[in-house]
Structure formats: C-alpha cells, structure tokens
Length: 408
Image 1: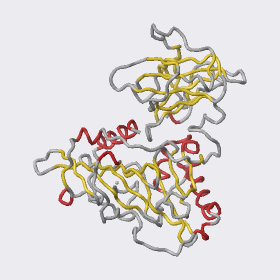
Image 2: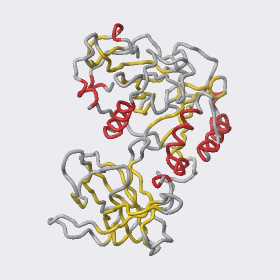
Image 3: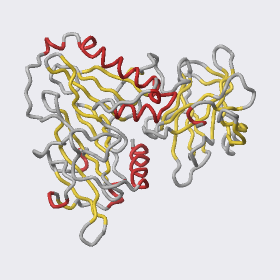
C-alpha cells in the first residue's frame, strides 16, 4: 500500500495541477477540475465531524429500502454490471459523461488491453445495513464507483478517479487520496453511513501554503480543504507523504470472467506481488539491488513449474506495430546463490529484492509450465496504481517481444 501511496501522490505533485476550490461540485469528474476528500487509528486524527463530502449523498438521507428489496441484488445490479463490462472491454471506443461511469472509463483507458483483467466488480454488503453494494474498480486498489440499492434500484454513492480516489480499508471504511493543486494534496478516512447511501468524514489531512508561502499540513474532521477551518497537524510534509494505511483490495470479480491480474495471467501458474508481510519466510531469496528505492517482491505458483529463471531485460528495438524487442539474458546471481531451485512448487516461493529503474521493464522471468511450454514474462509496474504485472512475451517469437499496453 505504501508503494501505491508514494507513486500516486508523487505523480500528483509533479503534475502541478490547477487549483479548483475547497470541495467538488456534485458533478465533478475526471475530466473536470474537482477533487473531494478522507486515518487510520494510529494517525491520532480527531473523530468525525458534520461536514459531508460534496460528491456523496447526504448521510442523514433516509430511504424506504429494506433487505427484502435487495433479495436478488445480482438481478438488481445486472444491467449496471454489463454496462461497466462494455465500457471496460472497449474503453477507447466509447465515451461517457455520466456520473459513476467517468472514473471507470478513465481507469480502463489507463489499463488499455488489460482492463478487463485488471478491473472488476463486487456485490457485497459493505455498510452492514443488509443491503448489498456494488463496487467497481481495480483489482489492486482503487474503487472507481460504489452503488447501493434504494427502493430496489441502484443509486450512486460515490465516484473515484485519478485525482480523487478511494481505496477500501475494510468494515465500510475508505481511504481517500486527492489533489486540488500542486501544493494541495489530501488524504484521510471516510466511512459509509449506516444506510449505505453516503460517506461521512472521520478525519482528513491536507497540505497547503501558509501566509508565508511555506508548505504546512492541516487536519480536520470535516473534509474541508480550507486552512481557516482546520488546525495545523503535528507533522511535517515528509511525515504526510510517508503515511501508510492498512487494508487489502476488495476481492473483485474481473470483467474478463477469469481470475487474474492482467491479460496474460489467465491460466498462468506463477504470480507476483510486493513482499510486505514479515511472515513471508522460508522462501528462496535473491538480491539484485539493495540500494535506495529498492523493493522486495514475491513469486508464487499454484502448480509445479521447472527451470524458473530471472532475466535481465534491455530494450533494443521496436517492431512496426510498436511492440518492444528486448534482449533477455539470465541474471547473474550473487555469490551466496549460484542458481535457483530447478523445481518451483506452491511451497517454495521466490523472493527478489530489486529496483524498477524506469518505465520499461528491466527484469523478467521464464519457466517451463506443467504442459512443457516455455513461458517468458516481463515484470512491470502498473502506471495506473503501482501494482505489479507479469506481461508475457510473444510465445510465437524466439526473440523476447512484448506486445500490448506496455509497448505503447
């Protein structure tokens, strides 16, 4: 999660976006200028206030919805799910300015050909009121749209996009990241109201310039971006950027209908993720780089594979279609380990410490699967949410050629 936060917030600062006011209008969107806000308990931020984010329903709103009206939520949400499946399947062939669809469309365009594998949906009661919500977003983090049922019909609760995003924390809580300008970035916690039709701000931190033009961190319980309605937080800007939050991505069902995180992971035994748990022990460990900005990743497999090899990748040329041609050579391992195990099983994961030095992949893997086929993948970082991807080289080519979104 911290890697995602650092990636997301640094992009927002570098973008030097135009300031756009304290809170968004109800119809603020990815194509507009609006942003709307939201602490983990260990941040010691005050409890909730009474100001509501402007892009949500009034938390005090009541409705006639009952658990009986949501007896068949799959049916109630079916048309909406298919609409999103259509948008995600062909994001560049469609357009929409409808609230709830714009953030999903923005995310799908960022994911490109992999969108149906990287994005999905979940129908589950997140607010605890007995009425299932529909969440749509990325399998590795951001919730782009959340709906609940009011009188048995879907109603938008909130929308998230690149500049105003929500990541689920559990128990009806969402962590917010957003930006109004290069100097104004915010993050904090919102939770679903008891009836699930809106969000309430529990705590909010944001950066802003004081009267001397220096960057300060402010805090409040309302979600306001106004320093005059907030108090200075007892932290530096560096502390703000370093904040980390608990929580795991929602278990979304990919729009592809298959389990997997990218277009080439369907039927692929080996997967990769960031190594964040101290309990991940007992694995083979390889250090390729241990300097500044290094990270640790973990390869696991759900079935036996052989000849697992780490690869050094170097971009050498491009095809006429824009695919990247890489040189791919086995990594020279450190002195403590001259080779990796010839057989990799679900009980023998492999951890690697490395760095991702640029936009194009610098490392890859290869192995022989249970069918006896040689599989080759580049280890890539999603430009959308910082998650890890395995992009498969064209199996019909002897050269290591990456088709698809990374090549573009």
